[in-house]
Amino acid sequence: WNVKEPEDKIAILQEIENREAELHNRPAAKVVQCHSDKLGGYTGSTHVIEVTLTDNPFEDLDSLFHESEHANQVRASIDTVDFTSDDKKLMQIENMTSSDGKTGHYWKYDSLYAVMTSELDANNEAVEKLVSLCSDFIDDDNFQQYLIVRQDYYDGLSDAIDIKKKKKKA
Image 1 (spheres, rainbow, N blue to C red):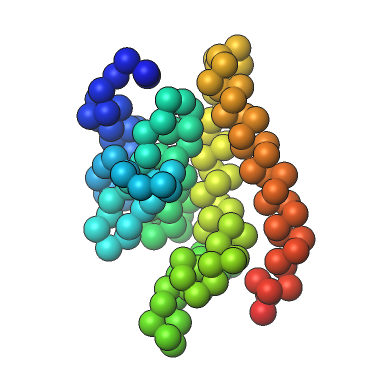
Image 2 (cartoon, rainbow, N blue to C red; image 1 turned 135 degrees about the vertical axis):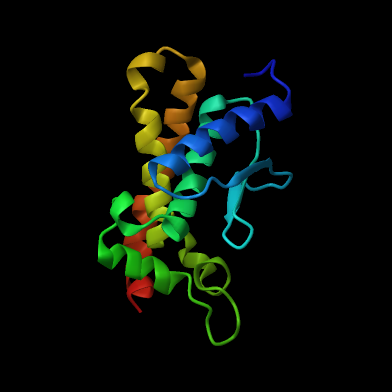
């Protein structure tokens, strides 16, 4: 991974996104390199996935799978994803534009971002896909580092859920 040029990495990630989209019966998003301090992003209006390329291919795959899941949340039909109808409704509510013109979970409820249904789902989907590769990559140092970072994230997330559940319910 470290010897590949950024455009080659993006081409590989694009092929993976093409396959993910086909699995969920939706058009593939365009994958581009992200040039900001975020790991990635999905923009529904342009159907573009941004991925910040790192030295760890597992982090890059996690970002792609995470953002691809956001594309599924927006574009895939309910019968091709594992959302319950209640989860789908929660995601729609979280993405509604509020009366002040700001999109719910990205702007108005910034402190709740990590515990929103759509974000929890995208994180879980990405980590599940990568953990399924465990037997093939368990001895890879990059994979081990990825697992450590994910465990730290989920430990913090567990605390955040406990702290923020009343605000989220409101």
